[in-house]
Amino acid sequence: MENNGRDFSVKAIVEGQEQEVYIVTSETTDGVTFYNCSVNGREITQVRKDEQVWKQIWGDLSEADVKSIGEAIEGSVLEE
View 1: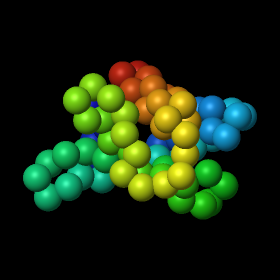
View 2: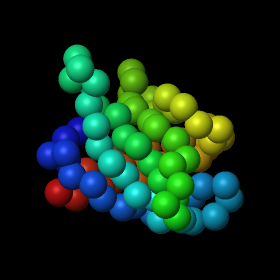
View 3: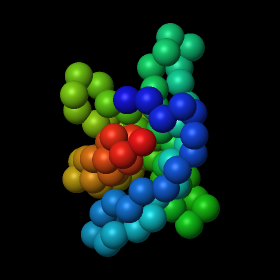
View 4: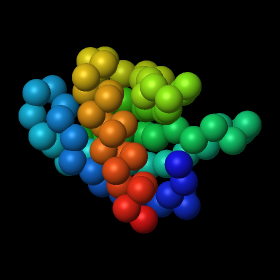
């Protein structure tokens, strides 16, 4: 999963409705990619894919919301 450090937007179901989620890609010092996610200018979570499962690093989103964002990120990355 690589998107060359670019920021991008995806559509995902968050809190029961489709929203535009702004994604900023970052990387840990050991090279693990994670994604900062914002809606309407407010950071809502940080996610990463760990052992083929999307996990929330911080935030209060449901597992379904995290999965929706993760799948949207994967779809966006695969389109490039």
